[in-house]
Length: 119
Image (cartoon, rainbow, N blue to C red; front, side, top):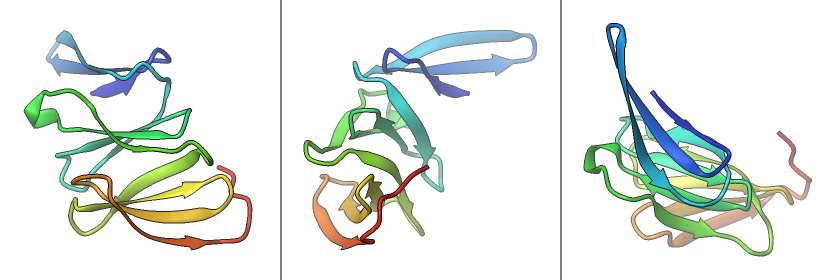
């Protein structure tokens, strides 16, 4: 079970029978607004309240890696483009939908919905 705290910490709870173990996986120092698993569960997107998107690979038990960081318009949501784990899509409050490479955060494409987006 993965979950995040307001402090920006990603936790992993390993639960087996009546026992559990808690592990801190990553501390990104920003409140995490959502966690999104890739279709094959190999990558987690961490979206923050400030509009930054991080990737975390549970199998590698490494640090969360900053993928995207916006200054002008905060991301409202992000998700994986399927099939596969090569691309993600994000949407900003201003209605801009963007496609990014998960390998290096390269911006690939965008379309403006010309409408304000709400969750």
